Amino acid sequence: MNFAPSSRIPSLDGLRAIAVMLVIGGHLWGGLGGPGFTAAFAVHVFFVLSGYLITRLLQQEHERHGRIDLVAFYRRRCFRIFPAAFTYMLVIALLVPESRAALLYAVTYTVSYRVSSTPLIFWHLWSLSVEEQFYLLWPLALLLGFRRRALIAWVAMVAAAVFRLVVALSGSDEAFVYVHYSFPGTMDSIAAGCLLAVYEPQLRERCRWMAESAAIVLAVPVTAWILAGAFWADSSSAARLSLSIFWGTVPLLIALWIFVLVERRGRILNNPVAYTIGALSYSLYLWQQPFTENHKLSTLQAVFMLSGCAVASYIVVEKPMLKLGASLKPRKPLPVSLPGELPVPARD
Image 1 (cartoon, rainbow, N blue to C red):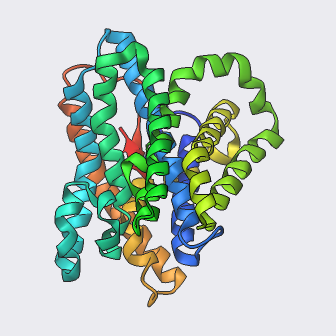
Image 2 (image 1 turned 60 degrees about the vertical axis):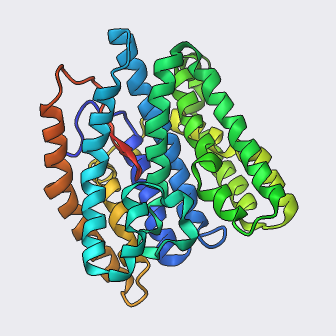
């Protein structure tokens, strides 16, 4: 089974592997930086990846054809995201009756606005909701304003900060949820990835030297982790205001880290194990919730059962549906392959 086609961007499967293992580890053991922080940080890595990969793909399409085919884009997303996600939702709804109250929000990708009232087994779908809202809006924005795509992404960064500031000042009991789990509160993470794709040629020309330094490769994600942890752990009013204004530095650092890793092409992130886990990351993310949050299972049992479900989902649902979607393409596919950025969401 080939998990590493030559069209994939170096290092990104390995980064997906690290991110999904952080999600699983954070749910199993609690992680560092406070409850939920490790998994949430990993999800923001996926968000930045989604913005980067989708923007890169759409830019290449625009360069090749002088336009963006929205119908083709949405068809690719539908075949990539929906089959595996809807399979998970259907299985859970059949086996866990108490989950059915939130099924409507799950299938409509609006869990990000109902996190507090969503059963735990569907709770992780908030990130897929955020991704789907991005998939809906960003290609349309590029279609209407391709030459101003950098400006649009910067406006999104500022708008997210303003939204978080307004929510923080409102004193709402739901402030934490809306700041951390809604699309307006997290869209600057995706926008940072979009900016990476837009400015990648300039970064490669001026900052490629950063990839040669192991110290920089380690310092950038550690700095992002420390900053994010400081914002997450402190619930004081001052911290909420700081989060509102300065959180955008965290996804920008993650974007810089992704750039360095892609340029570096280190063996740690480019090997068969990394390719395999990276390719399975979407299914792993979908199916981890029932097992990692089940305290009746041992760690070994949870990992074994999760792995089985993820592999089955990949083989039985994901690969056939991707193949079917590819067969419906009216022209040759573009050379960049996006296997699911979340594990998110985003892969093609």
